Length: 147
Image (cartoon, rainbow, N blue to C red):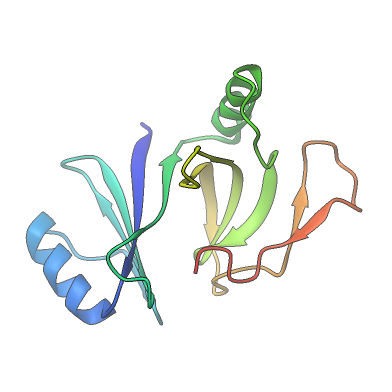
């Protein structure tokens, strides 16, 4: 099952954790400095909190899917719709190893389609290989990408 992801910027992570834990009656599945991650069954939602000076804003939106093939399918669908994407990337982001693609809406709101493959202790990797054309020279920096 896919689930919608909502990543919010919050001013105080501990207060936000207390609020959202009570609101959804669930605890975060991951807490790191400046970061918390919930998987909520009802409603099906992946809620991510980033402690930030831009509190009260949406950091980004996403669709968490079950397989790499689902990410590839989303990338193909977006490309066929003539939407500009990042291409398929293998990355470490949000304390997880992921396969993902990104697209930005006309108002600069960022959306990601991704599958989480493993947990990781790093919040971000410094370099991501863009796999859409497989050229190792196509590496892009992502340090601080979501902040």
